[in-house]
Image 1: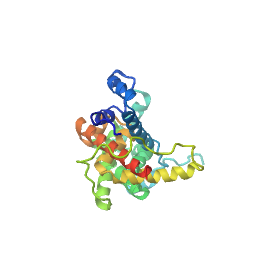
Image 2: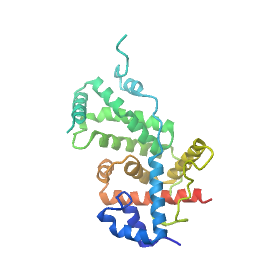
Image 3: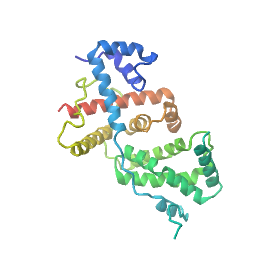
Image 4: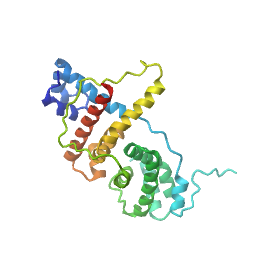
Length: 82
Length: 193
């Protein structure tokens, strides 16, 4: 069974909100009675969480290259205690 | 305004007045944010690296035009976004997909992604999962991809996204909705095969 078409957009627009908030009371009530829409809600939330949790490894620092391109001498990051 | 904001404001002012060391500090403070965002849009380390460098070159040249009315990061996001778009137009071989007639519902209701800890090797799953996430988001048209990454991944508010991209709030919301539903449908295709 498919989720209810009229709730698809509402699910998407309120996915960031706390389901227990007053703005979501109607949606929460519907989700508690409709397993298809509840599953769709969950799948959308999980999609967003997956991308949020996709960590990007930091790149090597490019400060020196950037400053060199700009013809700027930079001793940012150099150890001054020699 | 907290101490960090005050410090940053001073740094920006000094950089605008020609203090190169101050600009270098700004680069150091923001390079990971810019790189991370560029990678999440371009999905390629080499392109992200190029965008990172171009962004700070552009920022240096245009620094005097930064008025301080928005956050510095918002201003940087605008520059890095433009560079990502230029990179995409120059180098992308991705097919153009229109979201105009997106069927907002496709596939099964449940996202069939295996839960962590239920497979023999989490590291293998993570690598595979990352590839699936990369493949799915690469199919998302870049204009939608940018809104999705800014709003849902980077956590900017709808208003901040609008300011960075010069879009109205309804336009941001519309692109965001379509992006979310597209990605959800794409992931469903992978995981229900």
